Length: 68
Image (tube, rainbow, N blue to C red):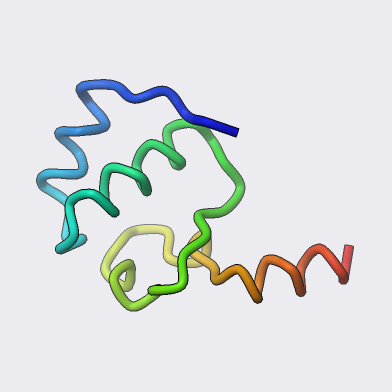
């Protein structure tokens, strides 16, 4: 699924605590699109965000799917 990109998304990303701004744009696009999770292999970059429980690794995602 692909999210829609808005100016407000870009602005949130630029002022966010996420150091890699490209990652920040992707994260905020996913959150504004009401995605259930944000998959990344680099969770440490997202420690300072307000909903870190929504940031998971691909391995964690597969585990959750197997449990469901």
